[in-house]
Image (cartoon, rainbow over all chains, first blue to last red; front, top):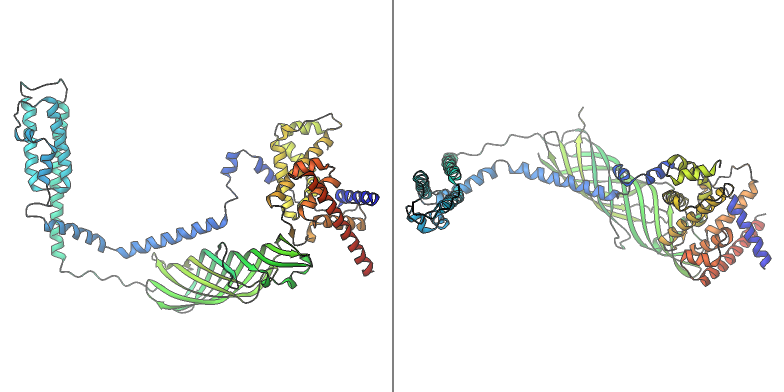
Length: 432
Length: 190
């Protein structure tokens, strides 16, 4: 027995040394990149980024820009005029002679201690106190720019006069004084107060001018919008779509979502009818009970006594759709459409994780298949969506939920995979 | 490889020129070793490249000997790194068996040094080893082909010594059974 074992071991050792394996797959460039310093590797770009994250981000950006453009275009001038009206309403409800009702006069008084306003010649004034007054005055004037009460105008003028007097005559002789050199600062305060006063006056003038013009134009009807050209011109167009997708086998539920992205091209025959094709790359993930996995199609790739209990699978597919598109609601700015057609698949990669019984023992098995397989008219697809124009050159954004129903099974186990997803895309006409 | 000592010194200094020489010279040896452990060819290529990256990143740990022994010691060092990388990859997949067959394009039957029948036999034997469960496959490879003892195998794989021995026994039994089955099939075909 030992003798046989030794012979067998020797045979396997010879086999291990001499077995015929292709060893030309070496790639020094990959090694060199991996050995490069970290900063260089990062600058050259990370290959490990997940493609579906990038595609999802692209789809989100397209959708966000389209929605914001649509909102911006729909706003027009109306909202600006409405905002002016709102402000005018406030003005119109305010008492005569004031722009806004409020405790504007009281706010000035609250900002400055009462005794100081009431008695500007009070002996308690001091240089430092005067500085404080100037600062408080400046603050209260700034507060009242928005309020713009005409009542405050008088108070402010009085305060400026008092400050100028205070500055010219100096502090009272029996005032508490600190040798704080604040004369220049006070001059600045006065200048600033004058500037603010001028600004308030100009703002008040502008507001009254606007309210006057609104009153004049209230009776006029809005200008009619220019008639716009239809978005449904005949001819070729090209575009790109991207979006998430979920897949299932025979109603068994979904696992993690995949994605679909690619380019499409089409030809519009009439205002409502087009034909489209393209090429899309999709990544599908699905789960299935073993009964939907056809072992007869597996050939010699599986152990003969293996029975699949369940599997988690994923496939990478190039899809070539051919479909008719009908715009059942065709407006100047947007269309509602429906499409139906067939898609052919080129399956490039399949990866399955099986729970299987082999000789009565339950175990997990992995398998990966990279032989390309083609499936003509693998699915029937149906979608309904909306596309709307952006810009002036017939560029359209489309949002298109879709369903795909399998016409025959795909993959090593010929499984019928149903798909549902959302395509967000952009199409541009090809000018002759 | 000529002037192994100079190459080793160059690799220790992380000079790309010498690293590339080592990579190109020992790539075939490393890939054939890893392919005995890893089921899929593409994965075996990745593991081999990872092994070389680790080799060059930590080359200073290699202790060179005399001029005559350097090449053997370097090959032994590369072998150890490749086996460790292979075991790590198998552990990462939780020792999950893989199926799907070995595609024909991975084999190179054009060698003129070997008899075609001999090559076919060696290929079939390696396929039998690859069809073992990962744990049996790893233990069989390490004990029978790569010359590790059960203590070393248990240490590298993180299993008890008893498990290592039982895995080896089971692997031998399955290989024996499959060899006999293949022989019977050939007799029937004749």
